[in-house]
Length: 260
Image (cartoon, one colour):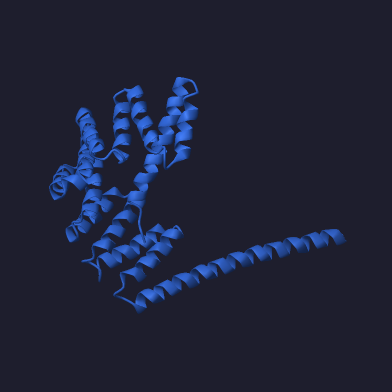
């Protein structure tokens, strides 16, 4: 009986400690949110203070609160600010709401037609088969063909791929690659188009080029393909496609990640 009582008391103590830790964590989160809100109200003209609160919501998985705050700012005192519309676009994109993300990006470009913002809008247009992608590609090429030509052809390739014009898409991706050999996105998209066309070996060859491009800076990526080539041909190809695709996908995600 004595040992049972001791065990029961230990369980109560452990439960109390865990409950206390959770209570302290919740209190800490509430305190952090209150501090960020206070800072935002103390400096109402500072977008940075508002961004800090948006980032806090994102970090804590409260995407709806982040979007609500961004919406209120974009439609309120920061209505003319391109950055808040860009933040709003990314939040909607992360929330898998392409329609709202597209609208927010359009507002971003309307306020600040920078090459970076235009490229993002062009890519989203292209992925959705919106002919506006072609106009943006033309604009980027006219702005600075040497510096932005690879993005222009990449956007064209995405658009043609989205509407099923696969051969045109491949030609555009080749043009993009020719202008920037280290720009990896068109390699991946070209490989996907070739795969859709049933040209599996050609798709594998394109992805192998991506692995070679990373030889100097990404040794782990090179070791993977070397190992897969020793496997039976079919399984080696599948592993290489997955490996190179993940790396290119990671870079693509980094390009459009919210920077706060």
